[in-house]
Every structure is written in C-alpha cells, then in structure tokens.
Amino acid sequence: MLGLKLPTDPRWVDMAEMSIQDILTDHAYCEQKAATFCISLISQYPDKFEMVEELAPIVTEEWGHFRMVLKELKDRNLKLGHQRKDEYVNGLLKFQKKGGSFDDRLLEKLLTCALIEARSCERFRLLSLHISEEALKDFYHKFMVSEAGHYRLFIDLAKKYAGEEKALKRWSEYLEYEAQLLQSMELRGDRMH
Image (cartoon, rainbow, N blue to C red):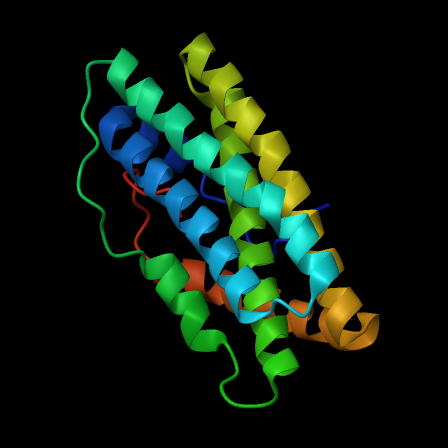
C-alpha cells in the first residue's frame, strides 16, 4: 500500500527498544514538526481552501500525538530530550525541486510530507508487531493507523492540485530517491527515520 521501495532493516526495532527514551523523544519532535508543517502549509496556501479544511484537523491530531508521547515519557519517568538534526527529512528536502511556480513547490511539499508519513507508518507498524512490551504495541498501532491516513491525504492533495499524472510521476521519483537515501544512512535505533 505505501509503495516504499526499501523496507526498514528488521534490526531497527531491537535497536529502538534499547533506547526507549531516545526513540520517544525523537517521535515527540516528529509529531511537533508535523503539526508545525501543516500550519505552515495553511499559512502559505490559504487560497487552497479544500487543503486548509483537510489540514486543520491534522494540526490538532498531530499536536495531540505530541502530547500522547509526552505522557508516555512521563509515565515511564523519562524526560523529553533535546531535538536532534533529522538527517532523513533534511535529505528529502534536498531532493525537492527548487524554483518553479507556487503550485510546483506545493507539489514538492505535499510529496515530502506523504513520504515522511509513509515511512513513519511503516516503522510504527514494525514497532506495533515486534516490540516486546504489549502496551507499546498498542501505543504504536494507533500511530500506524493515523499515519496511514495522513500519507493517503497528502497523496490525494498532491493529485488534486498537480494532476494525477504529474503527481504520480514525481511520487515515483521520490520513492526511488528515498530508498537510496536510506541505504546511505546509518541505521540508528534512536531515530524514527
């Protein structure tokens, strides 16, 4: 369903489990950035009314996710650590086409969001299936379902505003690039991506 070209290395779940505070901290910041980015899209493209209507509840949902992860940290007597550089997202941003029309740049942003949500969904699925703690399996299953919906929304918005053919052609390029990006990155259990 997600179309990802390279599955996550199965060792990632074991690595993540060894650094729960780090993975929860990184997860919290991912949720915070997702909410912020949706706000940014709304601010930059207020004329795309259907998109604004679709993204407004996502902002609330992503911020709610941030709060859920904070609660999970607190319940475990863990602290929210410092935000770290996100090599994965920065790598995707480098792939975005620069210039072009305002709508061309919107397509790049929507597809970048779709890919981040797709990879997050895939990783949450792995955690929901393979992490040893039952409570965390349920915790991550909820996030997996949510991210799948967000991924689908961003793809649908890209097709709506750029046209299906153009959006899907560029999406295919993003998927190929993302696989190469992941292969070039060190596998780390303290990062969601």
